[in-house]
Length: 68
Image (cartoon, one colour):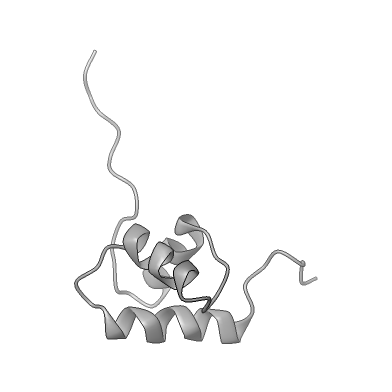
């Protein structure tokens, strides 16, 4: 059952298309560029999940520290 907070297919396409225009930017900076240009209202984590699903990035968050 689709939820109201899920990203729609056109929003996912907009994120991927925007990422193609700026391939050197990280997902966090890319997210805030998307928000500033009123492309899609999306969180950094959602941007990360979309880009990871299409195979553009491998990991969105760093591995936890193994200290102490």
